[in-house]
Image (tube, rainbow, N blue to C red; front, side, top):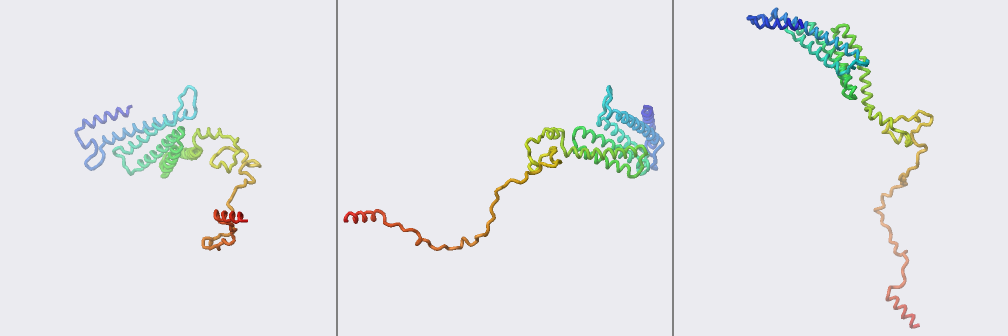
Length: 279
């Protein structure tokens, strides 16, 4: 609050100052003393705000996984906003008038921004994991590893933040594989369906390759894998030869071998009857 009051007094001084060069920059491009003072007071205010949010985060972490009676339990999403404020304050520090963009100070600030982005992304992933959104959580855990590696690459972080990032990398790796496994196995509804499965149908493993459930017989001396001996199945017979010239063969006439009928209908019957009457 004292920094805020001092900044307000400085702004009033800059407004009442009739010299325009003292408000921002002098004629040769250097920053004026009042602007330097304003940047210095802004740096103190932003730094204190960062420290305040870090202490707030440490307090929230104590009740994150330890649920005490009479105390509100912290959720992972409760830690996202403080990290966002820290990242925004660090960005404002790097953009203050008078700060050299190519200085080592700015490089350290950029490394801290990446470190706090990794921490923020980690708790976002934890919130997605709590909601059983495993695909999103796995992608965010991957982003955490990328931010952490980039922040530790140049070695400009302070010792405390470097240790925190290395611990975070170990936690992230375990949570990433856990999210991957849960994404494959499915949600709780699938787990409930698996527990309701039974082996009463006596199906062999060969008949239920698309279904999974625990079958103790598979690791016993008599595994229920496939019926043995297998059942007989009809199969088409294998031809002994292929008659390819059948359509080109001319068969001989067999009329002479056919049995000829005697008599010729009604005329033959009348002729036979007359002949028998004459006798």
